[in-house]
Length: 161
Image (cartoon, rainbow, N blue to C red; front, side, top):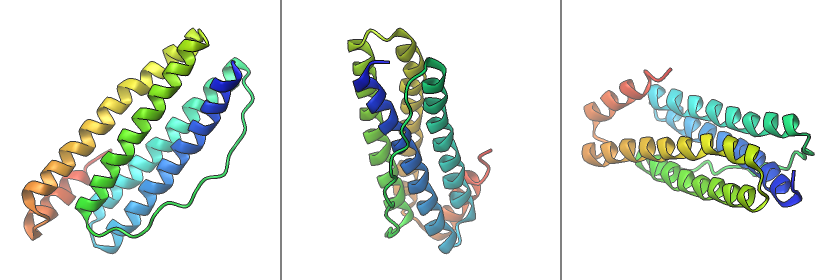
């Protein structure tokens, strides 16, 4: 694997694990606010992000690239509301989309077809991630985090498997 692409994929493993930490931190906030459904949704989102990190990890192992595990930053832990959480979620997912797009560009420059095929999965995944975060955020804005409506949304998000 070309060195710049290898370095960027190592960074992406860290970034995906940071995403998991971020969503776990958001889950804690929701638990503290007695929103177990949204907390569960965030925990599952964290688990998904660990899976994404492992997808990069496994790909790098498969192609014989050198893996270097990098330090993971501490995520924020202070949030002002559930709406704030999903605003930050959407913002974060847009940032991740940019990271994936950068990886695609690096793979194209390196003419690394295997990496481009693997990364296409992430391109599609990011479309879904942003769409879901935006839909939940728009719902929160419509209900204005009001009692019964927020409880209904919490219940609905808690159904995530």
